[in-house]
Image 1: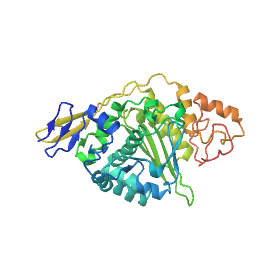
Image 2 (image 1 turned 60 degrees about the vertical axis):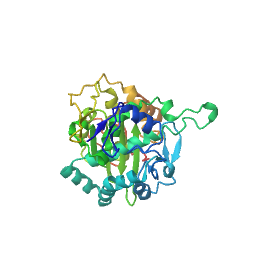
Image 3 (image 1 turned 180 degrees about the vertical axis):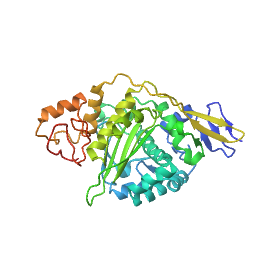
Image 4 (image 1 turned 60 degrees about the horizontal axis):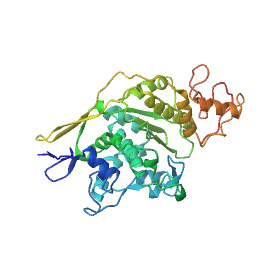
Length: 366
C-alpha cells in the first residue's frame, strides 16, 4: 500500500516516490542534485546524467559541438547540456520514450501523424514536456552573466522562476515511470504540423518560453508545439489560424505559429490547475484538469512584437521586400503586426520563403 508523508510526498512499499510533494520537488529536484525522475541522491545510486536533448537527436543533427541559445542571450554546448539522472531512470526513459520516438522519426512525418491518429498524442506530449522541463531545471545551474563582475546569479534567479509552476508538469511527464493515469483534461494545447523539407538536408529547430510554458520542436518534415498549462485554451484560439493553412509551413511560418501560441497563452484569463488524485490502498494515481471555455484579456500586440523580436532575432536585417524598407519591416515587427503566414487578403503563403503582406519578393531563410 502507498503511504503519504507530512510533505505530501507519496511512496510505494519499496520506498519509490510515486508523487513528489511540492516542497520536496523544489528542494530535491529544482534546487538539489537528485535524479530528476526518481529523486535518488547521487550517493545512493549510479548516475550517468541525462542529455536535455536525447543522444539520438544530437547524433541525427550533428549537434554535439553546436550551441543552444539560452534565455540570457548566451550559448551552451549541446553535448554538455545535461541534468542529474540515475542510470536506472535513464535506461527506463530510453526504453519507454526515446526508442519509440526515434523509430517513428526514422519512418518520417507520415508515421508521426499516423501514430497520433491511432494512439493519440500522449507520447509526443510527454516527450516534449520532458525536454521543456529539463531545459529549465538546467537554468538553475547556468549563470545569468558570464562576467562575474556582473554578479553570480543563475538564469532561473535572474528571471525569477516560480519552481512550483513546474510541479504539475514534472508529475505528468513522470507517468512513464509511475504508471499514473493521464486524463485528456490534464493536457494542454498540442499541435503537430507538417513543415516544408529542405532538399538533401536534415532540419532541426527548437524554441521555448518559460513564462508561456510552451515549446516548439522541429524535426525534418514535421514540428510539435505544446503549451502545458493552458487547458488547451491557447490552442483553441490558434486553431483559427491553423484552419486557414493549406499546406506545409516554412521555417519562418513555423516560428510565427509558435510566437502566436505563446502570445495567446500569455493573454489567457485563466490557467486551470491540474489535479492529482490518489487511492492509496488501491495504489492508483490519476491526473485530470478542468476544461473551461477559454477567454482572453485584451490583446497587447506590443507583447507579440517582443516575442517576434526574440524568436526572429537571427533573421532581423535579412528579411527583404520590394514593398517595405528595412525600417518599415522592423516597425511592423515591433508593433506585433508582421506576418509570414497570410497575404493582405488573408490567403496562406504557400511558398517556402513567405514574407510580409504586400511584398513581392522572397525573404531569406534562417
